[in-house]
Image (cartoon, rainbow, N blue to C red; front, side, top):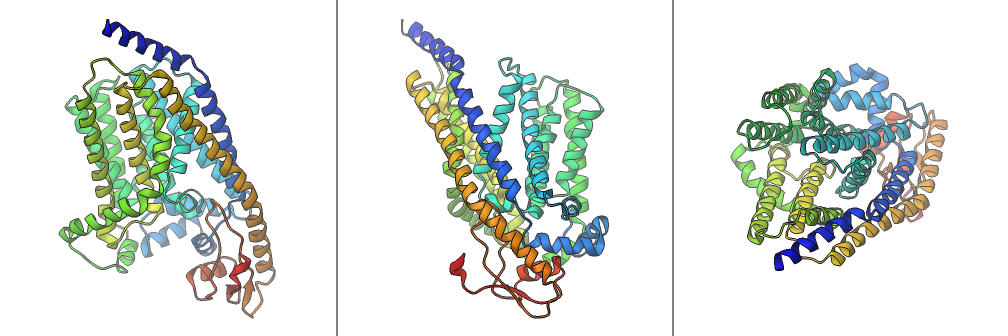
Length: 481
């Protein structure tokens, strides 16, 4: 009798949740608002700080020459150097950052959707249509957006996006090709190109990707993961990805510019870095994670719904708790491993933008934990509906609030920025120090504000980028800001 009641409950729950299309309608509405928000942010985005330095560098050396000079004198990130120089070469075109932002955004959505589609082919999720795949992909991208430790410098600072945001997008694109059921030249290129570019963009993330490729390659070899592909094909793909990423990483690491950059930091032994890394990882947990955990939880709650759909009567609660414990162990281990090379080189916690992979680790852990909690199936259908509905409505409200607030803030920032640039260009031959008014708040965008100190590197970059003859500073009356 009890068994029949439980089975009936599960059937009703599954039928109810699958037939209630309003969940996907809410997600679709939320996604539309998010797309508008991102488009608005991209439209009002402006180059800032180091971007002006690279603008001057481009004028002096050109795209390829600038990348070579950077490789030999400062950084081996050859991929990001080339991309950054290429994008900023369109600076004379007023809307170049708007176009660039939309292209990056579209590529991120496409890469995630391609992963979802190929996972569907491997695990035969027949109930996922094209539009559902697309909306899930946009929802996941929005989860990454809000769960970023510092949105402005990760998503909208040009020179940063070419390193950290690009690497994440390429990771999804390359992974989608690794698990694709289709063969051919195009799919092989979608393995070679992304993993080559990852290896030449961000050192710590490249190391994490290499480790993941090695682990999943071994798991495939020992039949611990099973894809809807011949085993030899999977092994070949992972080998190609590993070789491309590793070769590119070696080229990055061998750059003479890295030695110059490393000279600004102290030398410590690998063993010292292991112990120091406990402290820096702890700093991430205590100082950085609290900034994103609420958003990770919010966007992970829908995974609870998916778990409820897969809930079975005789699931062992102890097994669920054990799984969650292992997820947390792997999560904190991933944080430690990712931070380790940063600690070894800099003896400090990674910059906000450099911690973007922490968002990936956190969302994967959050989704996995809530999915496993859902597998327990210990909530009634009405409560499941309420929890999911609450999370989705909250996400919609978050998008609406963000859109409205940015529409209030950004036009003022962009207008003041544009007026400042026009004023500076008109006075570029002026030999007397130029004092400008402070910029308004920049919202979710990375601010291009300068310092009251003319010798500050931000001021110097702006001066060099605009080819000004005189020093430049912002007014001391910061209250106007």
